[in-house]
Amino acid sequence: MNKMHNVLDERIKEIVKAYSENGLKKTAQIFGFKEDSVRRYLDEAERRGMGVETTSKVLRDIAENYTQDELKAIAKGGRILPGVEKVPIISFEGKHIRIGAITDTHIGHLEFSKDRLMQALEQFKKEKVDFITHSGDVTEGMSHRAGHIYELSHLGYDKQKNYAVDLFGQWTDTPIYAIDGNHDRWFIKSNGAYIVKDIAKELDNFHFIGHDEGDISLKGKANLKLWHGEDGNSYALSYRLQKILESLSGGQKPNVMFCGHTHKYVKVFERNVHAISVGCMEGQTKWMRGKRIAAHVSFCIFDIWVNDKGVCKLTEILYPFYA
Image: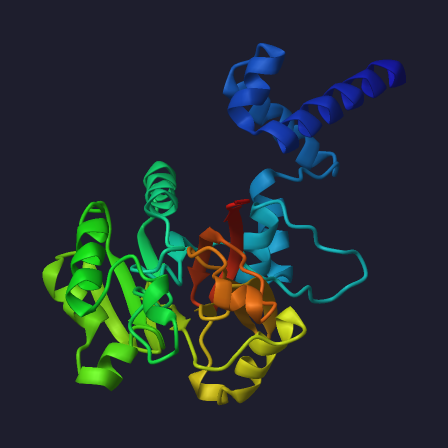
């Protein structure tokens, strides 16, 4: 009699274990029972004091011990460490944005390359960017520097503006957001002509967003700042970006900043700002060589995810032109 009792106990335990792991319907299928038969075994287990840990009961017990954020983390595979009362839960999920970034095209200079710009635009099209940014010096401008006139492929405001309109007019997929740079502003200083603003007036999807800097909202949750500047190169590549970030007031800091002007590619994460000097689309000029200034001829594509906390993830791909 004891032997038969023990066999029944083992059978009940087997069914209870299957029920705890799989639920009623699946347990019935496993043992070839009707669901009512499984219920009778569970009732017998309760009568004998064996305890039935149902899935719903286990979940209720878990829910009582963790916050909603912790429960969400567990549901996504997050690990709750034993012996730790509260685990900081950080969500890296957010809305995705893909951005194509260029700067310092210097359209009108002999070292500007139409082929490079078209290749960048082709890559942006292939990667399906949501929009394009331009961090200044769209055109080469006209300076009073001796010999500068001989470095130009397009002389004067009209020719540089019309050439830029023709080039960017070939892009119709997404918006382009641009600021002007110190070279563009040579036209302002000489005769009051706002060349980047005027380019934007000619094109439906080319938008001028500011002199030297401009801001773009990322899904209403974060801020992207375009920055140009009129300072110079630093001996250490990262030093310029660090000093720019140091100068920003706390309430004026962006989440992300794309910088132009120095023709360098550098990435710095400081004061919780992703700051990237995007490189340039113009090749090294004779003036730059004379000053021993290198040109990082390149463009970038950025993948940015934003949530209620701001930027939760950022990756970038650098496309360098080894010319």
